[in-house]
Amino acid sequence: MSYDKAPKLPVRWDARLLQNQDKFQLLQIAVGTGDVIEKHDNPDDVTFYVLEGKGVLVVKGVVYEAIAGDTFFIPTGYQREWRNTGNQFLKLLVFKLLKG
Image (cartoon, rainbow, N blue to C red; front, side, top):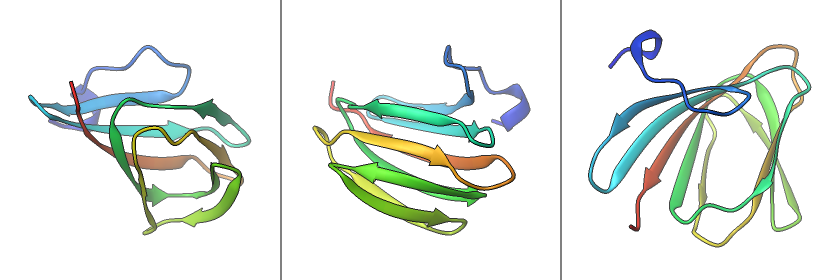
């Protein structure tokens, strides 16, 4: 499914659900300049791939610089926070392995 036709998710960032299968979801999120996705947990294992931009990922108090081409795996139970530290959108592909 194309990004423009993908359903928007009910969050304040531009987040789209690109694929939704039985045990897998693929999303794309665009975080605006200076914006933050506050610290949160997720009941699923998640892999992030940075498509564009520059940001910071904080996982269990550890800060990771993130640029286009970087990949991060976050297992269930680890809180994380994203911050856009660049001067353009921070675009992320989000791969979720659903537990439920």
